[in-house]
Image (tube, rainbow, N blue to C red; front, side):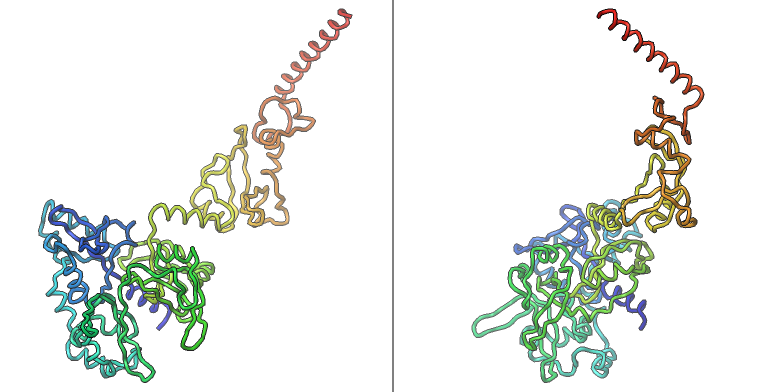
Length: 492
């Protein structure tokens, strides 16, 4: 499989749905965030700026028979709400459809509502695998992390999980490939006279004998960031990154206490359970491009270091351009798309500008630069700008190029890209040198030292009118000086 196919597969596997809720009492639509301890529904406005707060569902998971059943059972007043499922990229559009249907229902909007409406019976029927699928799974075990024929179903039954429940779910093959279940299961266990009930994600792991054992990933109130994680102590920045994006943003050494091996790894938070998860840094196949955008060398290096990389103008599955931070997620073992709010987007643009070394202006000495001129400067190309004005408002022309070493813009008489042998830096050209020196820098020479008004474009000496005016001024000054001398002699 080539790189592009791997990229598409990674993106396809990561696609998730968002739950929208219609509050029948308030007649309002919101995006589901979760349920608090009192069983009250927590929501946020259905806007993309709240993307990181949305409760997201693996679209390949058995939503109705497991997660949704648990979710609804925990609601304090389930009859008050109606749930809808929509693509994470179409939250705002879908919310408008529901809201408009409430105000003015039409046949078209009813069809769209039915397509999104969560129907438990329909979901369950869609998730059932036929016997041919199960035969294929049990007969072809080479592509799986664990052998399905070695699963101890009796142990699972002891935790309240039936074989049919697993086999009929879309999570089955994901579990066999070593992934955690995309949603939580209700776990029931008895320890003597004590009954334990909780919700948890599950996964299958092979033991030293090759038998498949069940791993239970219980829900934690919050990530345990104040305790060492397999030998790594989280810094303040580590904690901030994990709480903000779910990813730590760098590679750290994780110790395997069974083998004693130190493994460079990525660390992320499981947002469903708040469990910390690590992944070996050398196990992820980093792509050269993402969704139609080729990554530059700096982006590739930063991404391999675990940093969030800003990628612009990627193409979605709906063939629409979008921009987002892209970062490795150790829990999902794939790339995360993190959509910033407007303030973060502005800060990122400023950061990229600062990293470039020189701020590329949109306006230079009174002249509006075109988008092409700005792009050429960013690409280290030379541009020619006409009609720039000095401090006195006089026009001049010059070639302009970014000087990366001096961290500034340079002005040239000749095009430095085409005539390097002749390209001597001036300010801004020999033709206008005297003009800019006098008007903008306050300098003078013998010819211009007595001129009191700004020089015109290209001017390097007084005009006839200016010379006549200056002579009259000098005669008047001499006469005043002579009168002053006579007055002093008469006083003596």
